[in-house]
Amino acid sequence: MTKNVMIVGVGGQGSLLASKMLGHILLQEGYDVKVSEVHGMSQRGGSVVTYVRFGEKVYSPIIDKGEADFIISFEQLEAARYLEYLKPDGRIVTNIQQIDPMPVIIGAAQYPEDLIGKMKAKGVNVDAMDCLSLAEQAGSSKAVNIVLMGRLSRYFDFTVEKWEQAIRDLVPAKFVELNLKAFALGRGED
Image 1 (cartoon, rainbow, N blue to C red):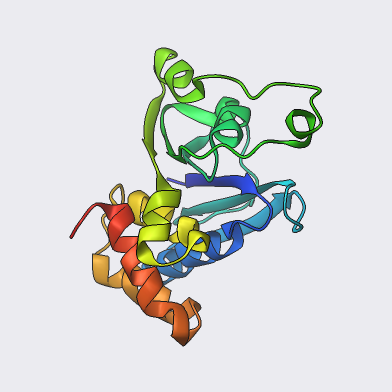
Image 2: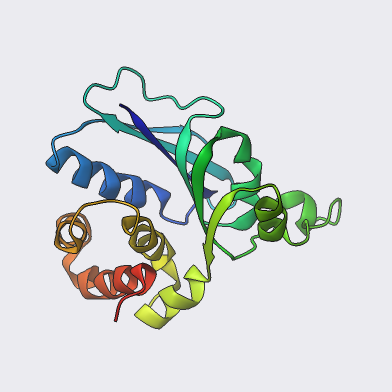
């Protein structure tokens, strides 16, 4: 049975590293994995979506509406934007941070209020946390992606050591300790 993970955020937040890390672990666990950056801008500010699909045999990298087991979101509005892709029993793992999109920046729109509360009111499984504060606590605001991966890891049966090894394999050596700390904080362990 194929499982589907969408990683959504804003350009420059590290969603590509997050998808590589997840794909790396899944391949090592023997799954057929398809990772695809579907659309978005690599420059800061644009909406970015990455699909990670895995199972015994995966034929397509694309996730359709109503198929995502998980939506990992770097920002609340992005979580709400892709809600229709979530399975009825799926889960959103999101950072509570708000990053104003261009219409809000130029004053043409207002950032919606209480998006997490609204999603929960619709019966959506939402695991929301302040990933930015935890990333800063680990040593860098840029580690939000690894904090999110730490949180996501709670929903997978892989050992913490496998996730930590993926960080060692994919992150430049000088940032490994910071990222290991960010992962642990996201996972919620001391």
